[in-house]
Length: 301
Image 1: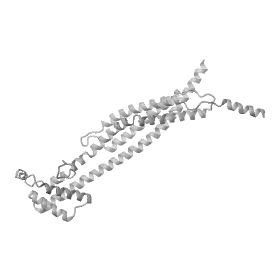
Image 2 (image 1 turned 135 degrees about the vertical axis):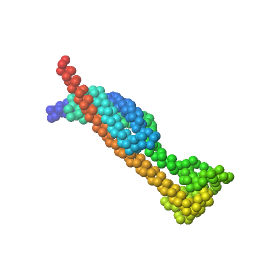
Image 3 (image 1 turned 45 degrees about the vertical axis):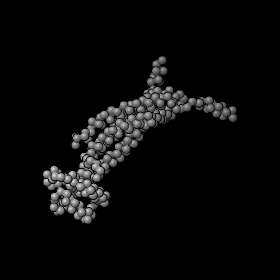
Image 4 (image 1 turned 120 degrees about the vertical axis):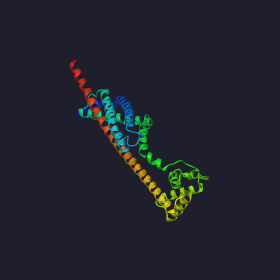
């Protein structure tokens, strides 16, 4: 009984009263990782904006831009998390009297916690700045991709004509003889233009133009432009085809932007998982090197 009591007493005495978590190295590594992340994001933003051009067929597509940004995020996580985790491992004090496996576990845990703190700091403190930096590039790329489509469907707003259909209304009522524009009252009937705009808008929402609306619009166009009713009907068909083509292009641009955003989000999440793993491994490496160098130093004394 005496021996059992002595063993229990000794076991209680060798148990450390200090926490296994060294917050100093964790915070130091986290701040280092956050700073490196911000610097690399600025660099990546500058490189990314050079890929975008307002001129047609001169810059990268939205998909290429998003994928390149996602790959850069992985590189950022690799470098920043590795540096922060390594500093965390090298700066912690040596744990005495614990097994090698426990030391390895604590180092990896410290690296993971350093990555977690760095991520929170980046989101809370640098989030608005990073959002502005990344958002500017993505918004520019999206504008380049869909700008031409929007330009074809959005004309100048007037009191009598919807901005979304004004270009097509102008196409409908363009005189067959340009000299008619110089004639008195050549500005046209605002009510007729407003009716045509509403017909086009309603047809676009319904997906097709009813025969009654097409007949009425053909008569209206013929009266305004001097065309025959058959030629007016042909012009209406051409304008409807242009509107459908613009609508299709807009939908394709939106679908491309959606796919690019989904790819960006998935790869960004993957990059964070990679960052957590790298931070843990780097901390274990840094801690091992720190202990090995101290052991060599003590043996040489």
